[in-house]
Length: 114
Length: 112
Image (tube, each protein chain N blue to C red):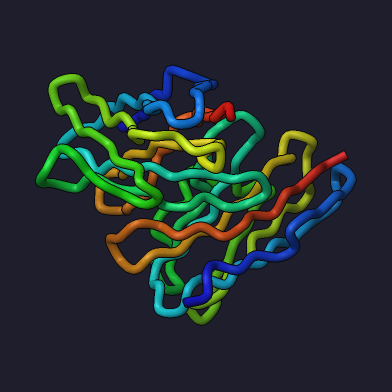
């Protein structure tokens, strides 16, 4: 069975500092991994995905994520945080049975402090 | 390109009442998903359609929840009768086959 863990409920970072939001996964077979962001009263917005290839994936709004197979991690990163990055971030892994279902973590609330 | 549309955005009902949510996916997207997101949790898949057929409804509480996707385009999710624990945001998403999912704004349901 597949699962995703986001060990931090809350991450606080000062504006301009680098940020990391952590995610670890468990899946049989090759992992298909995703990051989504959710702003208040909005649906989830796709940020980036890892399917295969380069372990460093670049996505929207300057975010990137590093896939680490040995540590089964897919941490989200950004070199310089903006106040507007404050939101709820979800990591997800795709079902490998062919149904393309996503299994989400519990989310991490990122607060960027001016 | 228009996004996934959902209505209503908010709904307040009393327990044992019925409620229905509507979703219009992005044009051309064959796959449609309904998720339930309880406060403080990640979204949980309720049902997945491919065109107008059900691919996965293993997590759908079928004694009270039903969903349909007539003509393979828009979809309706119904709860009858509602329970307090159904209070959540109901998210609809769509995707081309095998690609990332695009989410609508959600419907926030409060059951009193």
